[in-house]
Length: 236
Image (cartoon, rainbow, N blue to C red):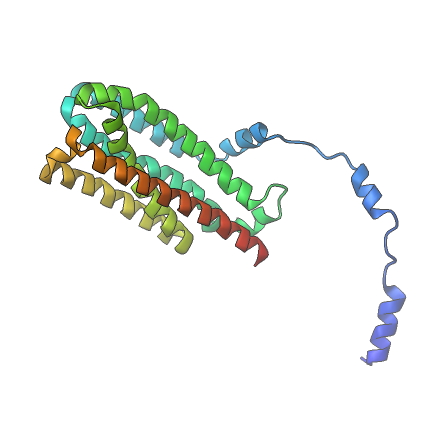
């Protein structure tokens, strides 16, 4: 078709610019949703098996504090990676199932969704952790600080490695890699107990606190980079 004819048809059939568009959009009722309501709504999207797994681990760990006595500390340390695994599988679910682009077009940004899921599951696991620490400390015979550090380090190590994997490996392969990391940390805790049992005694507290600080900083950095990655996805 002739170029001049194309331009003429475009000019003839081009719709006029809407008048008062901004005023019309401002007049539309916009339903409001505060942060608590948003977090509650996002909690409903967390898969039920995640809550069931967390509850089962808590019940098993609580029972272990009554039966295992001094061995309970390393046993709980070996279970903590499974708790972290539930957070990892939910944090990368949007990209895993190809829903990231869809969630980028919704009212709440993908960044907000990822942060909400991390916050909800992190808070739930933190509550379970705080409930378990006093029982574990009483059964193991070591202080609260030592107990908390020994339980938190495997959790943070799994979270650190899993978040790193989720950002780089997408799809089901990312889930398998996270599960492998969690299994490796569980095996490492068992090996540490069998080969170096003194690591769970009071004199090793300084080493655990140093590891806790490093892993806490590393996990925080991985969380920040994951949120930043969602922002880059929005601009791609």
